[in-house]
Length: 75
Image 1 (cartoon, rainbow, N blue to C red):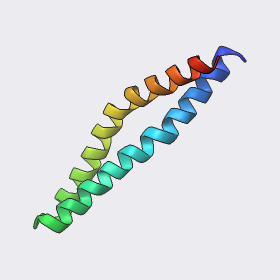
Image 2 (cartoon, rainbow, N blue to C red):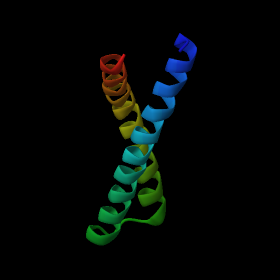
Image 3 (cartoon, one colour):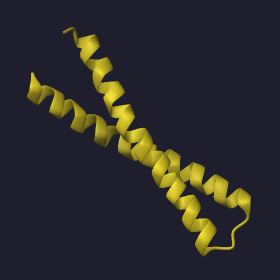
Image 4 (cartoon, rainbow, N blue to C red):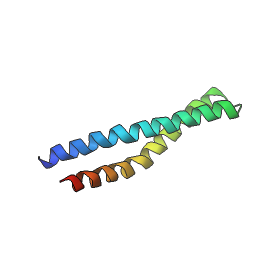
């Protein structure tokens, strides 16, 4: 297998893990802000978008590193 193919496989597998994590955290933030607080809709939407973006930034390198390590152990 070529290195490019391995990189594509790692990227797809990683994205299929960290994107749902980030979206779930953003959705959880939105739900908690809706149930607990009396915040305006703009604050809830912007906050959940911001939390989604930040959790994507944080989870991307962590998940990609784990997937790469698992892929190397298989080879």
